[in-house]
Image 1 (tube, one colour):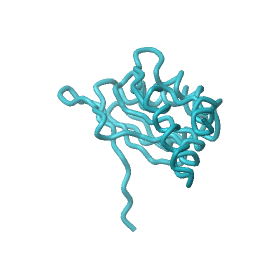
Image 2 (image 1 turned 30 degrees about the vertical axis):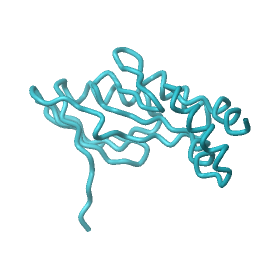
Image 3 (image 1 turned 30 degrees about the horizontal axis):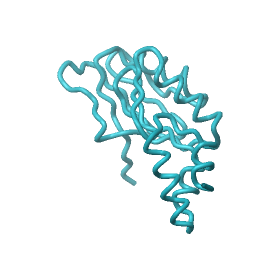
Length: 145
């Protein structure tokens, strides 16, 4: 069966990127690292990291979504990804120090935005639009009015 995996074309040695992600994610499996490329699995997702990029930058048109169980996971991933040259954006989006876009999303966000109480959903959505990192307690407070 054909398999599809993302490839990150970076302008630093692939081993640097592997070490960086190993410091963020607890479950990085390294299949192969050499001066030109690396093959890893992060949270079950195969990923190829290719070195030698001198021309192209990452942008928000492609991002990785991290489904977080709770606020503690959101806080962990958000702080790690935005540190050391990363950047916060709005509504759960951030960039890591290599410019890769991430969405750090608590499961509570989907639960609240999918709720049948449309007025509560609208309040939660308006609260989310003011946030960079998602704060679950603030979303729930807004949802309940």
